[in-house]
Length: 163
View 1 (cartoon, rainbow, N blue to C red):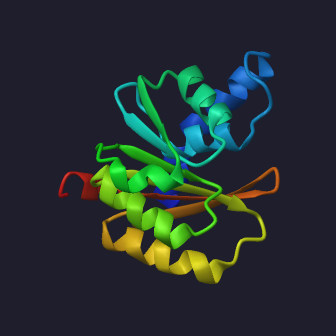
View 2 (spheres, rainbow, N blue to C red):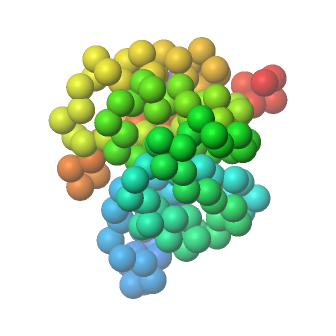
């Protein structure tokens, strides 16, 4: 039942992007566009993008109307203490260490999205998904986009009112 409601919640964001693409307003969807759609970015959200090469992700956020985004290098996470509504982790080598630092530095985000190479080992990712579930980010979806695996964990609406 929870998975069905999650699929419904993604539909409007994807439909909007696909409508813009068919009108020629945006280029074909890449991983940054899928992250935008799957994260349900709102204009007043603060998005923290953690990674080494994130320029196209910041452009996608600006294009969707995100009013506030911060780019953080994975090595600088422990000096950053800024609350974020949405956290994206892009291409982290040591996903467990980066996620631990990201969650400490970001407070309690309502959405965490992780972009990894398609061949990423699930064994390394499973402890991170369990950690996110412990924070209430229990709705988890995956997307295969252009050779990348995108995992999105979010807090369901009913739980957002509780936490």
